Image (cartoon, rainbow, N blue to C red; front, side, top):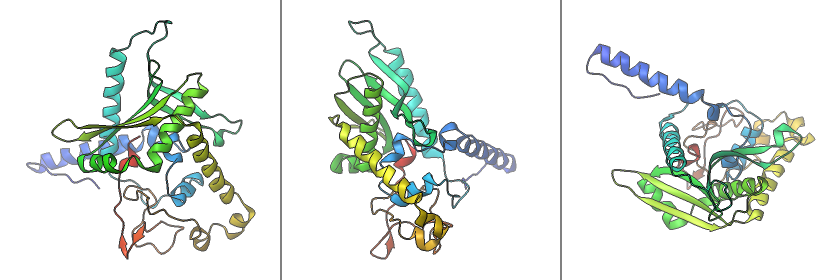
Length: 274
């Protein structure tokens, strides 16, 4: 629920209306309504969250706070406009940049098995696949010290595979972290493109899907006992997971989140911004 205030009763009413508009627009955006798992989700370290997503399991809450996603989407649009304005041609006549172009990471005759998404930027001149992440300054420092984590790393290489499938020759993947702060702070993590990283992430997703579609799973009607066998990762970013239900003792209605030393783990939010 959004926090609203106004200078008087009219201001309070208007504040609620604006907040409701923001939540409604964010909840009904194409990104929010997407049912199929995209490249930004394939590498999620939490098997349980991926299982919920694959089964299109009823969420534990109707909506969450969308403002991080809204701001991130606006930043992506700004970067798209910026690189489009700086577009130039290569010696062979092709445009240097592919900006926010949709790529297919894994084609398949079954729509449910297709993995596709919009790649933030591909620079043909350097063979670099770019992805933008707008984060808090504390989170930026964490990524600077520890690297991007398994989900973002997999996402970068999955988009590299998508560009390769589109006929490009990616050489590197890069994630650009920009801090939401009163001063500009930018950190870039990069490494050579490795197709195997993407293939391993897809294989893991398929193994989870196979477990969900097994006769054993169907026989239990996906009971709490069955869900309890699907692990939640200590690396899970639970805070904005739509299946998070703090204190839940029934995994069919929601997950209590990752527990560490008897206390809830720190739940990040960067998985919303992809």
